[in-house]
Length: 154
Ligand SMILES: [Zn+2]
Image (cartoon, rainbow, N blue to C red; front, top):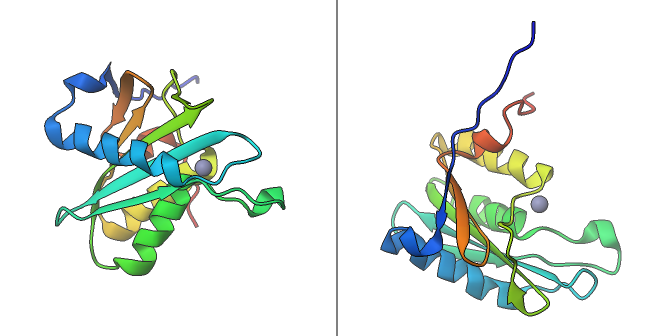
């Protein structure tokens, strides 16, 4: 029997997002400025809004020992889990720059980060809305689980 997964998502111009989401996108864009990415030249910024309105940001950090680098999204989520236990992330925006310009294509989390988004949703008991941005448009999913329908679980 062949089965299918459907992934509900919205794709829209960033300009059509509500003001609070556009603000979160702007925080993610500013976070690209703190990226350390001399090897790939791919600067990623991520911003989270917590339930009390607090904004957290992070950027990707590369290492001379390539596997020791880390994605912006996972740095953001581990920062949250380390310093804001008991709080809830309601939304995360992710943006990227390459060659000193915002990437045209929306930036989507890698598989490892998708897993940690789902782990974080489970830990906090609430979904995280993801706003994944390109230069002008974005993809919005209401829960990170949409990105990883066959999520690993112990
Ligand atoms: Zn990643």
